[in-house]
Image (cartoon, rainbow, N blue to C red; front, side, top):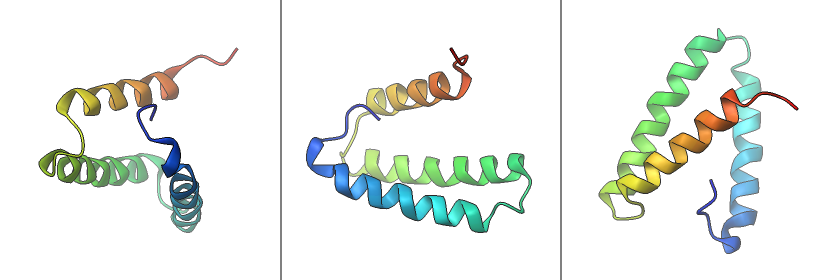
Amino acid sequence: MSSTREDQSEAIEACIDALDEAITMLSHQPPRALAAALAVHLQGVLAVLHAHGECSAEDINRWLREIVHGACAEEP
């Protein structure tokens, strides 16, 4: 997400690594079930960030547009 601060890059990389490990452990699950579960979890995380003033509704909308763009972008 483009609005993350530079000083968070190490924490973000650590989170990505941990999530990669968790996804690997869940790889036996159907992809649609995994996507649905991740969506529910993301909704909760974003709701907490918004409730605590960590991001605005527009920030969330922008992040979701970036996710859609990244997921649906045609390969060059």
